[in-house]
Structure formats: C-alpha cells, structure tokens
Image 1 (spheres, rainbow, N blue to C red):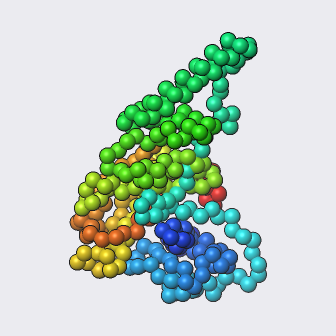
Image 2 (cartoon, rainbow, N blue to C red):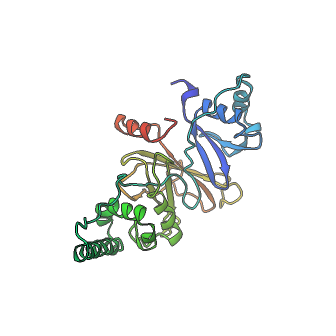
Image 3 (cartoon, rainbow, N blue to C red):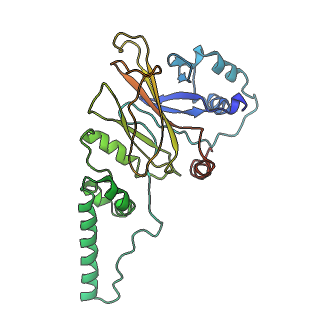
Length: 289
C-alpha cells in the first residue's frame, strides 16, 4: 500500500482530544486549512513521544508539498476518539424516524385515557428494567431504551443504558452512555473508561456507535516524568466491539509485562484491519471513508 494512503498520524486537537488516525493526504489538507499549525502536537506509532509538527520532518515535507492553487475544503469528518478518562468518539441516535408508535386512541374519553395509561405503564416498566444489573437484559431492551430516550428526553435522568458495574464510577458511566446516544452518521464515537478495580493490571470498558464486530485498537502512551522507574512505556490492545458495552483484556506493555505506575494518554481508534462487511458499513457511516 502506498504510504500516503496509510492512516498513521494522530493530531492533538484540544485538551485530551485527538484527531486520527489520518493519512498523509488528510494531514496535508489540515495543514493547508491551518488546522495543523507549527505548534500542534502530532504522533504516530514508532515515535517515542508527541512532538510539535515543526519538529517532525515528515510533517514539514508534507507542508512544503501543499499545492499553491486553492483547493476545496476537505469533507473529512475528524474521528476524535480519545481521552484519558473516557475518550472519545460518537453517540448513537438509534430509532426509526417514525419514533415510538403510540397506542392509537380511536375514540375520545375512555379509549384515549386507557391508551395513554397503558403507554405510561409500558414506559415506566421498561425504565425500571433498565436498572436491573444484567448486560444480557440490557442488550435486548437497549434499542427501545434509546428510542424512549430520544423521543422523550425528560425520561433520560431515569434511564440506564449501561448496567451498574462496580468497577466504574458515575462519571465513567456518563461518558460510556454518551457514546450510545449519538448517530454514527453525524459523529463516530468510541468511549473508554478505565476499570477502577485493579490499577496494577488495567483493563477497560468500551462503548461505541460503530458497528458491532468493528476492530478497535487501544493505545496507552506513558507521560514523561510520571512513570515509576521508567522513562517511557506503551501498551496496545486490539479487540472487536460487542453489542453494547465491551470489556477488554488486561493491557500489558510491549514486552508482555505489567505497565509501570504513572499517567497515560489513552487513544482509541478504528483499526484498518476490518472484514469487508464492516468496511462496507463504516464507509456508509463515516463521511471521509
């Protein structure tokens, strides 16, 4: 494959948000639009740390080769899917455009009151089921929960799209829930939460609005000056998205040992190694594919 078509670059956007992976051409487009400046930090696999683009020779070569004639703005939709506490990504507005079909009230009076009453009881029952700590149950009712949440926003504080998990804090659950409540067409999203159970052997919970069985790569890059007894450390996990919430295996370092204690930047990206079926689905969901 031509190197310029390989998605390998990550670009710092703001706070703990990152754009990527990007091809050379996509980076060049962002350079032309001044979205990547000389002080913008970039990284790709093989680099020991994030560096300003002005210090990366490959980026500077791309900048020099930008066409002088004006070019149309890229229609790329940045795949921002990274953050330390729970990165990144897009939420899912699941539900047909017709919304929830209410019980038809063909007659006024008693018929209308009965229909509304049954509807309220049904909604209350489904919301109550969302609090049962069972991922299997959540998988079966999650599409209906999403419809209710989208069409009846006032119910959102009472709906749990993710079952209660002891290893997750409330803010983690909120981050993971957001990745299930936005359409992938508008914004692809992967949310990552660190399990708080055993920080010496870290594993993660993942949600996403990308198709089930999409292969995702999760990187952990140690922050210089925070690592115990080491100057640098990196870890990587590849896994397939499950329906709803995905639990990863324990992340180890590149040598297969435990990661040293310290602060890490977590980056979650869609892998380039997908089945033809998943590639086809993603090509319809993500504008720049």
